[in-house]
Image: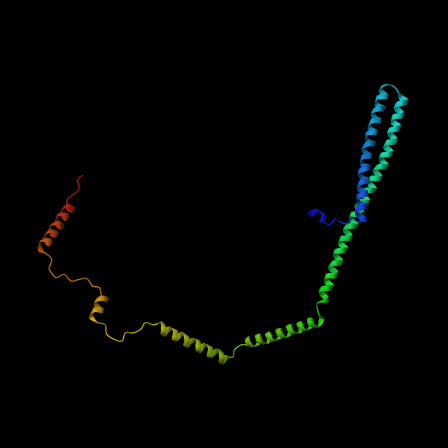
Length: 222
């Protein structure tokens, strides 16, 4: 049911001409095939007649072959003309499509231009120039060089800021004396032994040292 409401494309005279030329080209192509078949048949018949020593019939077959060849040449010329017309129509169609595109583009440009007021364009350009001049003036003011006095004042302020930052970074000085607990925590010294070392340990150490010295003084075996 949906296909009943589909709008069929309109067939133009150009479409009809192209269809007619293509139909004629197809028919001429079939005619060429028939002529080529007849020519080949007459040629084969002439061969057979020559083998049979029938000269007159062989000459007649060759004459018929020649007539068919002439006709084939004429048909080839017709086909060439049809092909040329089809090419011309295709080229003309493309030229018309290009022309339509150019015309549509021109109309679009005119429509856009009609929406632009020249006075508005001029006003916009004037406003842009005024804004640019104002910005250039601001840049010129900001870009002026400082005088020598201004330079010295800036350097002096810089040195002052450096001194203030250095003082702020220094560690704070304590205002009260540290207590004994703080001193003990700060100085982590080893504990003093409360008892004297045993004498026996000293005697053992002396004997061990004398034994090692004796071993070192003995001569090595040969």
